[in-house]
Length: 624
Image (cartoon, rainbow, N blue to C red; front, side, top):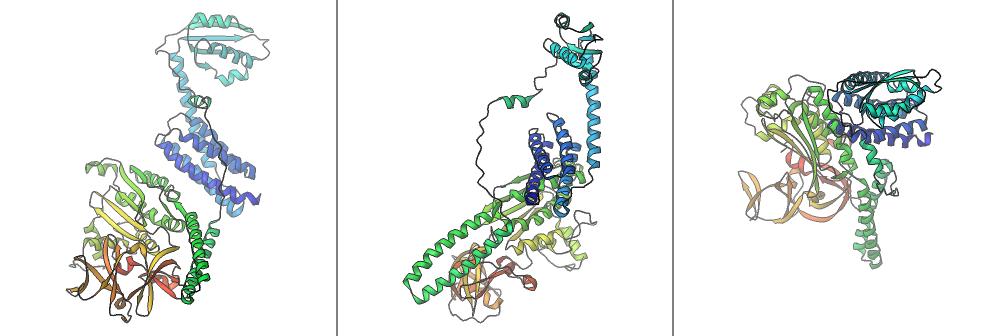
């Protein structure tokens, strides 16, 4: 069984994730979601039984029965809370199976809560039965003969015969007791006494029956929606069974393949250099064919690594819903662009930052229903999580219509912490940037959700590490939008190689707009700051030779126009060396703290080339 254990855990966790999404659909009134949940629970139960995990099988069986009783009924928030708690317990059991190969987790709390709901349901059914008795126009009393051999079967036959001519509303005792067998029972129904009498007079083994007419306070109730699902099952539906053409691959295998592809790209670069140096025709032809094959292989591997953001986004509706209930807030959570694709590594790394931003939106951003009402807003706040492709990058946004960022409060906190002086002049953008500093928070008291100044620092650090950028857009009492700009992948990128002194640097092509020659005519100094004039527009210029302390070895320099957050800047370099695909090797240890670089790459001749991080190189600690 151990051979199947990993597959069982993976599939079970996928079904738990599906259930979590369906529970929220159920709470929002989508009654068909109960069928998705039921199928998922039934599948987990079956797999658990096959694997021999009896405790998990018992829990799923109990929940399966409970879900069956919920079909066609209104589901309250309390029931959804119980269902979500149950999925958490199933996850806990799966974790214990993975670590200890045991499913012994205490589920008594769930059984007790299910029992209390079932007791409430039984009381409700009793109340309905009493109401049905009042609304029936016939009271039918039946006594069977003492020598009746199978009283339970005879009783059920009488009930089925009466259903043909009248509408049965209730029985005393309940139908299950009649099925077990009893001498005397009473039936409450809507119908005509004459037809009932004709039926009962033709049934054997009845010692005595009486039909009494009662006052019917309501017209006959129509119950056409007793079994909508049976109609669906009876209607023919063509189902095409598609052949399963997918296989599960461990992510470690994908990472290994990606590293091997990276080495091939480096070797390819080396062979291109050799063939160009020695001008061997046969070698050049072979290298060209190999280059095309490696490029195609690289593209295919990149496609395998790309996954939809839906994979991570789908876990956030549950989190937002739980936090909203915890804080007594009403929140509508919307997700857009779920089909947008990102490299698996990038997406996994972004999970925690997005979680922190959503928690802040719930805790800091959205007001209580009472606050929103006094401000003239609708009681239900809106939080939107979206993803989209923009040029070569992916943009992720977290937006809310809550309080917005109070810049004056940030200023006071910054002065209190000694980050700025009392009378210093600081721009709005610089004030917004302060929220990303470690330990900075505008909350007076920390909660278990926020207020310790850790979350936003994690967001900034992670985005920078991935070569992305952040921007904060906010208006007081209108809301806040956090925009994250990310490269779709961090493994292999197209880059522009530039020379500065004796060193070569790589600039990601996604940042480059154009390149122009620099001379005395288009490079001007205004108030001591250099600007490059491009088509009569002034663009802030930065000499990389001055930034990196290199000697300028060229009289005629080149200006690389790059874009950061819709703003253009000019990087002055000595020359353009080449344009090629490079393998990104991330910086680790102490080197990871060096600002201005997102990693390094190795060229075909073994040269180590730093990759410039345009955002941190030009922006420093400034965001927006």
